[in-house]
Length: 248
Image (cartoon, rainbow, N blue to C red; front, side, top):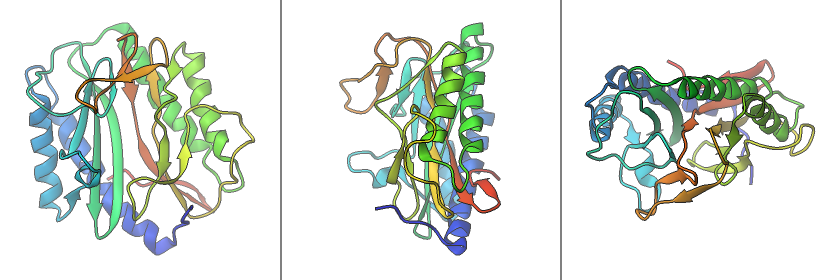
């Protein structure tokens, strides 16, 4: 069931997502060679708790961390630990926040020091794909207008989009209907209505779109072990246009 949000509910979502954005800025400032993925976990947790909020991902059965931290060929759901970041890595950080009964969700892929040309192109394409998807999130449009916009940018840049994991609605639940694929045909899918709040999260791969899950049961990696990038914003579709809630 799709739950459209009132203006008051959008404002509550904005508060939760603003904290996620703030945590992401703090994490981004801390990324450097030698930093461990667990260091990033601690930084985000301290900030979220200092704002009177809770980490959202521990509400997902079986997961206990504040962040998902995915390095290089890891697409999503990487578990923070002792892995030390190295120059040339790219690291995707996904952060969820729960405040006053509403969820925030935000992801950014950061370069660690100087990265290669392929990684640079991948990050730029993934950011542009997210921007294009947001611009397509307008009242009266169709859900797959967003999907097609994301896929078009990825394809034109020579990359693929992950098909097994998608964006989603968000509100009083972390994952609500509808699912928001990163591929599709413009003009198809449900009509976009005022008050729909969705998390757009393009996941772009350098090589194949195929992925697999490691033996830890969580970490999703590219099947060919080539690089992947992930960006995510929460967007409220309003009469005036799309409002990005994951900003400070």
